[in-house]
Amino acid sequence: MKDRILVIGASGQIGVELTLALRKIYGNNNVIASDLREQNPLLEGTGPYVSLDVMNSEMLHVQVIRQNITQIYLLAAILSATGEKNPNLAWHLNMQGLLNVLDIAREENIKKIYWPSSIAVFGPTSPKQNCPQQTIIEPITVYGISKYAGEFWCNYYHKRYDVDIRSLRYPGLISYKSAPGGGTTDYAVEIYHEALENKKYECFLNEDTYLPMMYMPDAIRATIELMEAPKSSINIRTSYNIAGMTFSPKEIANSIQKHLPDFSIAYKPDYRQQIAESWPQSIDDSIANTDWGWKPQFNLEKMTADMLLNLQANNK
Ligand code: NAD
Ligand code: SER
Image (tube, rainbow, N blue to C red; front, top):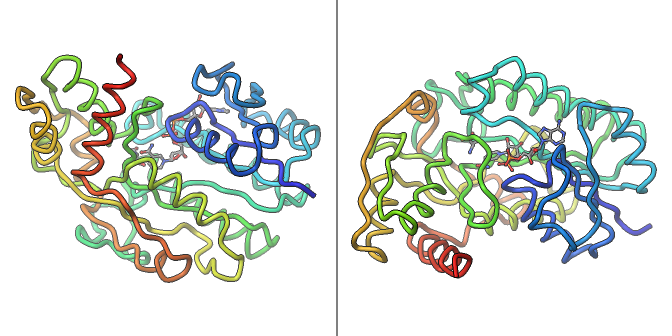
């Protein structure tokens, strides 16, 4: 049987690019984009799009059966910064949405599920440098708590019901196509837009706040490589650490100034500073490398050149 893929949260920062990448591999009509939002201009005309609330398990069930779904990518979530404004809502969506998908996967024998976790599972007591796969994990945000609990639900459904669920702990993701959705790392996307539009940026993190980051093409490739890897090579059923690069606001600003010498940055840290300080600065992804060959391709300089080129082309 041909694979039929449902992407839930397809209108988000990752969802748009992942849907387009999956459509290239599996065929436009075999990848069903879905989201609470009615449509997304970046996806319009590229394949099927349905309006779907992941919290409505009946509606989800109907779509899975009607569309003969064999794989689900669950991307709907509330991220770290927005989560702190409404912790109950973040917990509810991030947990119940996942459980709804896991239950349908079990009942309908869905072949593979993808669900992302985050570096936000780590907390102030985790190692700051090269944070290992297994370590002290005491998250301080509701988002991090929900991701950590979600990882163990994934592991449980795999061990108990043999659901083939795979997961990555994404670092902060930087992209030019779709806007970010309320994370602590969003500054690293906003800064490029502001540099081109206004030649200046006021950053909500301090200049020396180092965080693990990744350019979207690497994140999409990591996701697809993980999902295409043979089942026998997937040894982590909670979520894999993956790394791309590490930088601070000052360093990303310097890299932009090499292309746009008039660009200036000011710092006005807010509540997101505390969240950022609770996370590691860099991640050890050696297990992902050993198990399924993960290797990032973009560093800060390469990403900045590509971001500015693409944003300038989009603005023409
Ligand atoms: P996003 O906020 O940009 O997109 C989430 C999408 O889910 C939105 O389009 C939203 O409309 C949709 N959605 C919200 N509630 C829904 C519901 N009830 N039913 C259906 N759709 C709903 O998020 P993103 O950045 O694309 O993140 C996707 C996943 O990756 C999330 O699980 C997030 O935690 C994880 N992640 C993202 C990053 C990052 O830097 N972007 C880093 C680590 C992990
Ligand atoms: N980029 C995400 C956030 O800041 C990390 O999961 O919330």
